[in-house]
Length: 253
Ligand code: ADP
Ligand code: MG
Image (cartoon, rainbow, N blue to C red; front, side, top):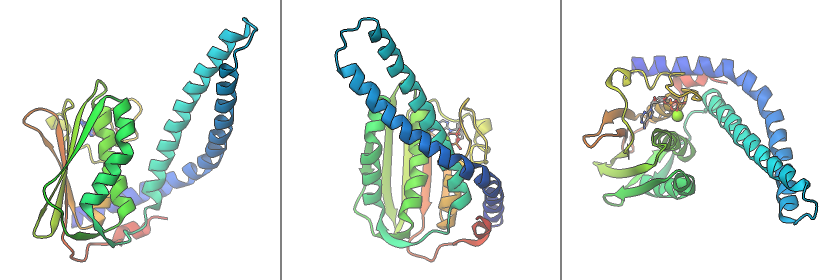
């Protein structure tokens, strides 16, 4: 519990610092996003209309490519801003009775198109319909989403993700398995640290936020190598007992 408190405090302090900057960036970013959307529509319309002017065609093609490139970067910036803000602003979990298996099914349906595009197959295995657990649905979704994103990013050439849900005495275990390269043993102790990343364009916040969310629910998360290669992230969520809420995270904005 002591270690959890330190984690939460550290994350809250980082969040507070980051929040100000991120807030300033978010508004212009969303206006860029909206204008870009208009531009995308214009470019799409112009490309669809077959112009008789041969000189214009390469220009339009290039415009389309530039717009696509800008879109990718704007989306990346938005994700970074979203991650920083989720550190800064995460309120204490608002607990409601939820079915974990339903939540997982819905989330996987939501990310499936994105995974398909990346050549990553995804499967859900639910042992049995479980009991309702007290949890904050949007926070648990965020935590799982971070794991699914990491799994996808670990498999740039494609692969498979299996999310399995099982229950024991009312407590739930959610495992996220991938067929990526695995986490080197010497890094396993560091990957949950805020800002720890091995990616050129990583924020290193995904797992820190995920762990913070799970611990605020009174749960635990661990990372294990899989025998077949790849990584397993295992989340344990407690059965209906009153979870450790808020505490140090109250220090966040
Ligand atoms: P980021 O994704 O921005 O790097 P995270 O906190 O989400 O930050 O992850 C931290 C690091 O943990 C990653 O940079 C990567 O080295 C490692 N990692 C996380 N998930 C996986 C995975 N499924 N397979 C291999 N390595 C992983
Ligand atoms: Mg990540």
